[in-house]
Each structure stands twice: as C-alpha cells, then as structure tokens.
Image 1 (spheres, rainbow, N blue to C red):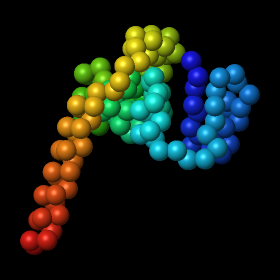
Image 2 (image 1 turned 30 degrees about the vertical axis):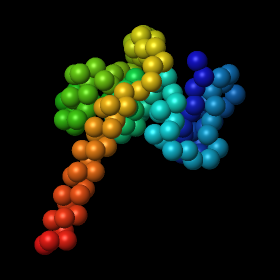
Image 3 (image 1 turned 120 degrees about the vertical axis):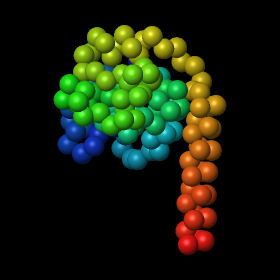
Length: 131
C-alpha cells in the first residue's frame, strides 16, 4: 500500500519523512477527493472518518473515546453498524482495511445524504426568508 500522510502541524511531517511509500502533502487538497480515491482512511479524528464512511470508504478512527463512554451519537451509530472502526490496534486496523476490496464507493448513499442536506438547507432558508 501507499500512504498519503496528512499532517495537522508542519512538524508532524518529520514523523514520517523518509519512510518508503509514505507521501506527504505539500499543499492542501480536498479531503473528500482524497477519500474518494483511497482504499481506506485512518484518522485520529472522527470527522474525516465520518465523511469517508458516508461514501462507502473503509474508515478507521484512532481517537481515544475513554472506553467508548464519550462517543457522539453519530459515531456510536457508525461504529455499531461497522461503517467505522474505532481502534488503535495495528493488527485489527490492517485486518479491517484488508477485508475490503477496492469497490466504487456507495454513490446511492452519498447522493441520498446530499439530497437530505439540501432539503434541510432549503427549509432553513425558506423559514429565514418568511420570518
């Protein structure tokens, strides 16, 4: 596998510099485009994992949720439905990502979510306009 490493801070790049098959972004790219073209996402946060999972991309969050006590409801649902894995165990993560074949992400699910969000925004704007 090739790994695209997205650093939060400039000094984070030093953790992976020089490691074979690890590529460091030197300029920003759209996260959804990155997810779309990847075989899987491993992230320290939930947002990127949620977005990728919504497109059918295998997603892992390594965020420590204090033994699952502090999950956001959306994260709890995605983890329980096995759309996101929450783990820091390297072998578990490799097994999880390795179980997926590179299939096209679930466009039906992504389009449904997009349409749902657009409807909500339209309702909000209508309400704001009408007072």
